Length: 537
Ligand SMILES: Nc1ncnc2c1ncn2[C@@H]1O[C@H](COP(=O)(O)OP(=O)(O)OP(=O)(O)O)[C@@H](O)[C@H]1O
Ligand SMILES: [Mg+2]
Image (cartoon, rainbow, N blue to C red; front, side, top):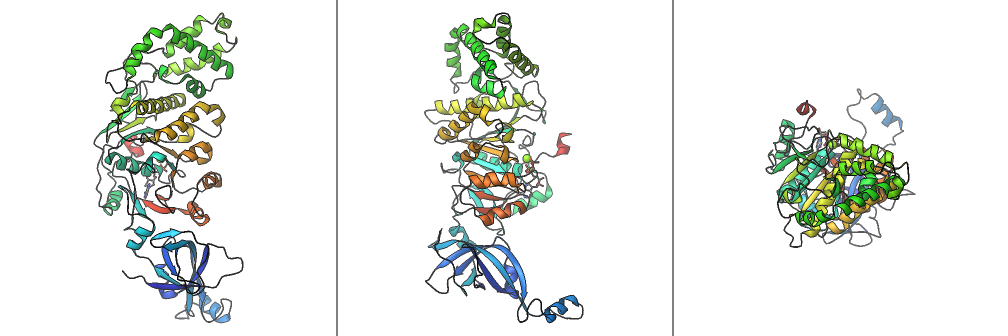
C-alpha cells in the first residue's frame, strides 16, 4: 500500500512543546486519524528529514471560512434541523513526535517538523521495521490500532526475559490473562514455568479456553484454544485447593535460610537472636546428618528427601528445653515465649516438615515445557511467604549447581508480589530482598527469570522495579501507583503515561529492552482456560 497524504503540519503556538506538533486535516481524511496511530512526517523546509509521530489528541473540529463564534457557525449548529450541512470544517490533531527516521531506525531528534510538512500514513511493513517488531517467537498480542501487527517477545535473547518482567495494573485490567499468555508462550518455547498463584486463577491451564468470545478473538492470531500438556498443580499439605487433583508439598523448615525465616515471621531482634541460637544447637546436634543430607541435596539426583537437619517441632522442643534458663542460650529472658507462640501458630497449619508429603524438588519441577502452579488460595500469609522464599532459594540453588547447564530455562511468576515484599516492610525484609536481587543478578546468566505481578505497585519496594526490566503496564488510575512506575521506567514519554488511566482492559504499555520505543499493545486472549468464580463453587 502506498503511503497516503493525509494532512499538513500547522504553525506552532507560543509555548508549544518540543515533541508535539499540531496537524491540520481536511474533514474527508479525518477518519484515518485514530489515537495512537503512527504517521510519517516529511519535512517541508530545512533539510530532507523524515519524522515518526504518534497521534495523541484529536480530532478537534474547526469551521473553515468563518470563526467558531460567528453567527453563521453558531446558528447552523443551534438550528441544525434547518441547515442541511454545517459550514465547511476541518480537523486538528496533536501529534507526539517520537523521533527522526535514520534508515529504518528511529533516532532522537534535535529538531521539529516545519510548517506545511506533509503527514503521511505508514503501512504495516514499514511499521514492523521502524518499531523493530520483526524478531520474536512469543505471540503476546498486536500493536494497538493495528490488528495485523504482531508483538512478539524473544524467548531466546538473554537480554529480554532473563532480565525479569513486571505486570502491573489495577483490579480487573487484564494482568492474569497477560501472565497466562506469557506462561503459554514460554512453555511452548520449552521453558520450565513455576507460578505462585494467590487466588487459584491458574489452576485450570491444562484445559482449553472455553469462552466463545475469547476463542473468536484468538482466531485473528491463527491460534486455537488448547490446554497445557505438561501441567501440575501443587498445594501446601493439609490446605485446600481450587482443584481436587492438586498434589501436596511440604515446607522443610531447614531449607529456609534462618534469617529469611525470622524476617517472614517478623521477629524482634531478641527473638531473632533466640531463633538463631536454637537453630545453631540443632545444627550442632545433627551435624552427622549433614553429610548425608548434602548428598541427597544433590538436587539433580532423584530420590525423595525425608530427613531433615531440624524440623519446626525440633525448634519448638528445644525452646521448651531452655524455657527455664534462657540465659544458657545467651538469649534474653522474655524472647523465647513470644517466639514459641509464633512457631506454634505456624505448626497449626500442618504445612511443615510433613514426612508423607514431598518437598520442593527442583529436579522434578524443572523440565522443559513443564508448568507447575502452586495454588496458595487457601494458604495463610506466613505459609504463603515461606513457601515462596523456599521455592526461590531451592530453584536458584539448583540453577547454581547445574554446571553443565542441563536444566531448562526457567521463569517464576509471583502473583500479588506486594504481599511478599512491600515498601512498608522493606526495611525488615532485608534478607528476602537481598535474595531476590541475587537471583535477578546471578540468575540471568543461568536463564532464571522472575515475573512480578501487582495491582499495587506503590506498595512494592523500588528494588523490585529495578529488577523488572520489561514492564507490561495495564490500566492504572491511581496517581500513587502510576508515579512509582513513572519514576522508575525510562523511555516512556509523558504522552504515553497520560494514556495509562484510559487504557482499555487487556491493553498495556510495553516498555523494555527488546523494543527501542515503548509500545501500546492489545494483549491477546490466553489459549488456556481462565478460572471463573463459578468454576470454583
Ligand atoms: N487481553 C484482553 N483483552 C480483552 N479483555 C481482557 C483481556 N484480558 C482480560 N480481559 C477481560 O478482563 C477481565 C479481567 O481480566 P484479568 O482477570 O486478567 O484481570 P486482572 O488484572 O488479573 O484482575 P485482578 O486484579 O482481579 O486479578 C477478564 O475476565 C476478561 O474478560
Ligand atoms: Mg488477576
